[in-house]
Length: 399
Image (cartoon, rainbow, N blue to C red; front, top):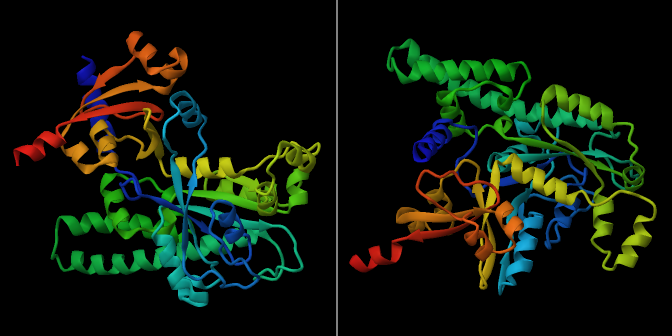
């Protein structure tokens, strides 16, 4: 019976087609107007030193970093195993140069920048909620709600142009009767997408079946991507927890992207925090403030927005967190380590991190009967600790 149930679970997972690319090698891009703090945020997430001067197009080529995903489970496993090598999960982040009004029509190097957004799988939409006479605002005055509308409008306009072009081409095929099966289905999907975009709404807010999602995924539409809104406040405002804009921003986001996270932070604060090394320095800096770094929340929120989870492999040589898209099977998880592990998968030995915490170590977990043998239909869960068995070596010898 359990085996039968496992098959149903796997079939259900494989049957649903979601918007976005299916692979594990996914990235999230930082998007916004010029001079809102994109590169400053990026710099705090990496060792790269990206130009962040007061110039609208100082960042022309996208820059990529891999930020460690904070996870107390990984830290605990490393403490328990004391391995020679520790490899945490990472989130791949792209710093995309600032867009301006008219980007969808090619203004401000817009087409190149929009193509960089098309290349990522989710978006950190960053807006500015701070005044600084030394850092000019490309629109003159600081107004994050207006800025949200500008960027969102440009993404919608770009998607609408692409969808309209394909709609018109497909409509001609249907009218001529050249394809009586696939083309009418595509036209129905494109009609829904076109109407949604014409109403100023994002593709991700639509209701799509599998056929819709397959077509939309081929188009890599900008507004189909998951989004997290980041509000860059002044350090003073962030520490005081005060902003005249935050409620208006949340209201706009709730209307435009229901359920999308809104995270206030301060790039200046984050940069300062990274310079603090001792507890005494941190205590002196924080003072009575309860504010803490928001980077862990930003990174983990972005990670989960991409439908990413991770499983662990543990031993004296290495403790490693492997990144995997949610809903994947044990063989697919093995394939993240090596393609042959998936191809020649036999079984996986699995127990959860909760089992590890309860019993203290792997030997005790086994003694308690909590380590289980999982087959091809098992759906890997976040925090699983796995050991894969495969016949890759013997298969190569036979050749």
